[in-house]
Image 1 (cartoon, rainbow over the protein chains, first blue to last red):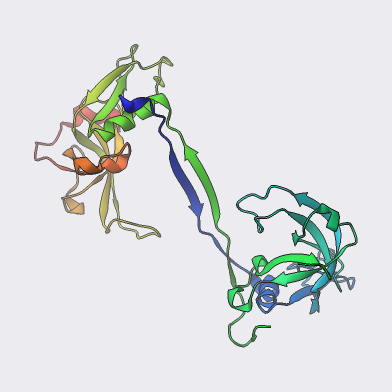
Image 2: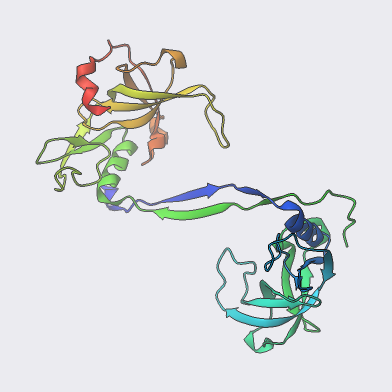
Length: 152
Length: 167
């Protein structure tokens, strides 16, 4: 019998969650859809990006939303030589903490670079947004960051 | 830059959670699945307590010994318990109301879940005798999708005493 053949099947478990964004994250995502970055003003005057719903020190509502970026500075990074299917880029890239111009906190995102030699702590990068027609109000509206003045 | 007036503010965010598995059923369950491919329910008997499991996991959960004897089970069984589904949900493929029942196949000592069709949902009852309706022979696969559903076979209801141990 051909029963010696090992059976296997693909099985997908999926929960299609939808979250409400609230007024602060919602404003941040709306700005991403518009190709802009917003940060929240904290109680000590620092600019938090991405904005938190509440002040991390006093737990009060955060203050005014202000525009930051789109350029920034890498504060820490890790090179991904073999991207996984779920990663934002399918070519080798870096995960990086990026402090946008005008911000006091760093934001995690992908950096599209030719290789790790192009990156260092302190390297200036800028956001490469998807075309406006493809943006939906998501972190993925930023395709990746690229080295400023680089060949990307 | 996109015109901010063309769309309202973002208020929701899709955050699906997805896990992709490559499932391998193993020896015992493969025997059951190969049976389905031939339009048969295959179970296995425990050599110690004599109970017949379908599908068999390859060992008896009571005695902890391998189940080595294959048992061909009947196409006919008894509804032990059931649930009438009246609530619509995302991805539903069957028209509501429909009946989900535990069916105890003749010769088996465990029931398993099956869809009951060809009967109005308000006429289902415990003890009802049902038979499996299979897909066309050309469409049989090593999957429970080979069983389209169970339907009443017209026999007199089973006596409660015959299935009370399986509720």
